[in-house]
Length: 274
Ligand code: FE
Ligand code: FE
Ligand code: ZN
Image 1 (cartoon, rainbow, N blue to C red):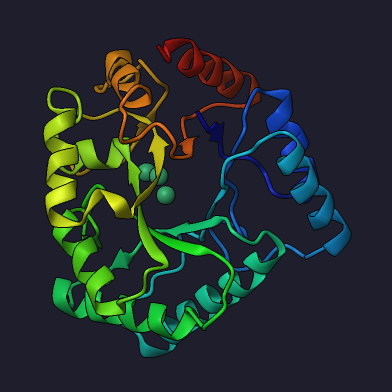
Image 2: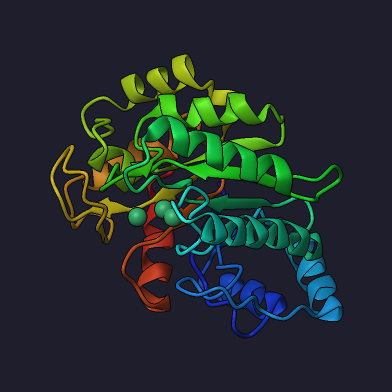
């Protein structure tokens, strides 16, 4: 079982691995650049090599890097859209320091242009950024469907996957987002995974974000809660960590915690594994 959480990238990649080890994690997530800005973290090949060897030594699962929230590939202004596309391409190139891992991002918000136009812009940016030989698998995150967000329906993610047509593109399922988006993982996890399989294919499900939700079912809100303190409840997470189709996927906590809280939730999830 690969469980981890979001970590601060400010100290470098090896420091993140050491922090992960100190809280019982064997995968983690980090923002490739300031989550609300566009400044990328600087690269350090020696530090990256140390991170890779520590992860190998300790049997880590694949990491799930996260693109900046501000990167909207389907924003209306052509210049801003091109800039977001450049950020994506640069992020993918930079992941060469941690080859073989995942890079996840929020597909984008169409800001009134319509779902179809948004999907076309996102797919075009991905096609441009995913140069041959780039070193990671790119993941689209399932969204809550807040405002004009794309990715609140499995069909929208499938349309992007089809338009890009790359085997190196998958999906990261966020439990808070899908529940807020109207997929009832609390009462019918099996049904939601069946729907995912029918629409997208479970072979494309590569990682999970484990978050409880501060809001009720189908609220389209997207506010994360600590495990067991929201509308999903602990039993949902027990089912998820024990589900045969999910058991080898990296599971990343994005709950409102500092490190001690993450350490407790990681231990809790491990204790639920039967
Ligand atoms: Fe996210
Ligand atoms: Fe998430
Ligand atoms: Zn969220």
